[in-house]
Length: 86
Image (cartoon, rainbow, N blue to C red; front, top):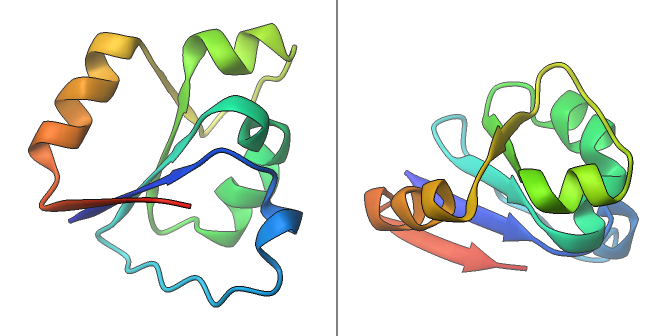
């Protein structure tokens, strides 16, 4: 499993070919939280996480995005085979 960490809204990655497999996970941090609904719908076969402090600071809620703490973020990185920060 690869953990894909996004820090910008999905629209910033239009020019890049994102190759995300079904068993990969996505973590939204910083301004990527603004695109939580887009990430969740476009990658509905993946686990989509958001850093709780970041998504709450932006006043965003999404029912299928799993909120995690900083400690859980570290655990997610350790458990993944690889991680890519976009």
